[in-house]
Amino acid sequence: MKHSLGIRDLSYSYLRNSWSLGPLNVEFESGINLIVGPNAAGKSTILKLLAGLLNKKSGDISFDGKNIEGFEKRDFARLVGWLPQSTYNPPHLRARELLSLGRIPHLLNFWDDLLGREEIDALFSRLEIPCKPDDFVESVSGGTRQLLNLGRLIIQAPLFFLFDEPFEGIDQRHQKLALEYLNEKVLQEKSLIIISTHHLIQPLRFAQNIFVVENGLIKRIEKERGHESDIYCQFYF
Amino acid sequence: MKYVSIKDKKYIAIILLFLILAGILSLFLRIPDISLLQLRIIRSSLAFLVGASLSLSGLLLQTLFQNPLVEPFTIGIAGAASIGAAISIIFPFIPTKISAFIFSILIVLFMARLSRKTSSSELLLTGLMISFLTSAIVTLLMGLLSPHQIGALTHWMLGGVEGKRVEDLLLLAIFFVLIWLINITKSNDLNALLLGGESAKSLGVEVEKLQLIIYLSTSILTSITVSIVGLIGFVGLLIPHFSRLIFGSDHRILILIAPIIGGLSLLFTDGIMRFIWYPIEFPLGAVTALIGAPFFLFLLVRKRVIA
Image (tube, rainbow over all chains, first blue to last red; front, side, top):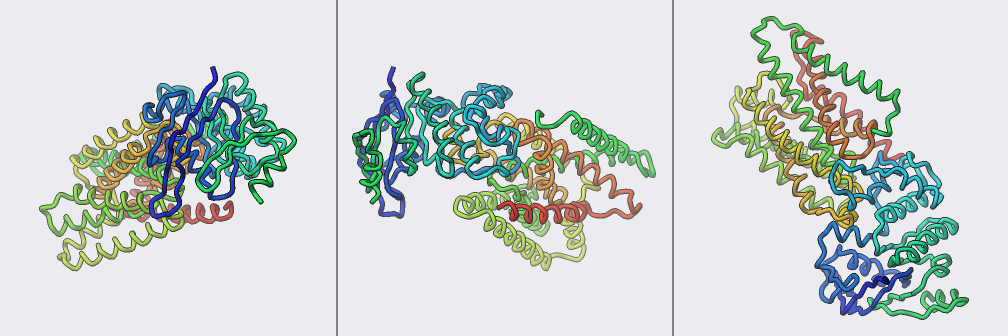
């Protein structure tokens, strides 16, 4: 079954700020959906609204037809996962522990095994994360840290992935590995993946749909293979 | 815990065993009269509970503020509690613990509000200023006291576990156990909070509720300990760090282990201080500050180097 994420007349504005978003009308489907657009266009705000972290001014958001307000918090976390643009990483936290935090919505009792060793070890080799699972997060490179946070969301294993600029500092090869993994998710589980990014080379190869956000509005553009640089030029220069 | 090698485990077991033995031994050491044993037991249990409460508070605050340098004393909660306690010395009809609690929770809420907008160094500076402010206010309040009352206040502020009432011990014990149990059930939510409030929310944690639990837990524990034993600093800073270093960042283990290590350490420190210069006793608060302050500086410097 294909999944869908519908946005109807969604609008939002920040307090003490003239900037406003929307009204947005858009429908996302299973597959890798790319959101592009200049800085301050509202990409992060849209993702936060979809993740239920901001209180929308008006409009509706629905996941497979079910309104966002109808979910119990934990059920929602199993269904929808969000990766923020910048992440805080506390001291003394091991890479394995960081990834394991993604399992929290799936734990029924507080004594259930948080660490899920095999699953995390498998992801480490699958994404070729360039550090050891027992390394401290504070001691690895910036790109590796970002990769670990990306891995945290993969471990959370939602149906709807919301990535806010996940590829910052990640090299092309690791971007490709992560996207291949996500693409597999799309093929197997019909996951719905939304990625907001300025890194276009690898994501454009995998994306099924492309959306442009500009001046607080969103529109879908047709993707034509071989014209990747056109898209880039059209919206950034 | 999985991150500790077997060799390390042996060391940890030895250290813990040593601390426990030292604690028990200190009950009987240099005891002039066996009838004093009851007092000793109260004193030692109190030392344990105070260490445990401060460590738990420190751990919760460090997770809440996402800042490893935070503890009841560095962000001014303890200072605020001391104002409350000082006021109740001047106006005896105000219950000490309640006025200490009111002042502590005000500071916790203030710092929580501040921490949303400011960087961690600003947060610490604010805490430092609050500490200055509170100690200045307490000093001013001293002007209203008789010499005898000033003696009592100074003695209390220096921090110590000797000669306390059994009712105080029981009060702290009840609140500590209750708060400990509540937070143990919240340990996975606390783990999620390691990633910050928004990420924790996206992991399905009811962040506002969890924050409220932490505010209440730390204010209650800090105000009770401060009003009973005075200012005993840096336990809440050192112990969570030490525990995290050995046992990793999983709160399901930390919440269990940090208060135990904290309790044993304070029990041990109190035991040592009691007979090292017998019969003179050093104030416990001064001793923990003597160990804790350099450690704090060490953390601060090391953090700069990494960042």
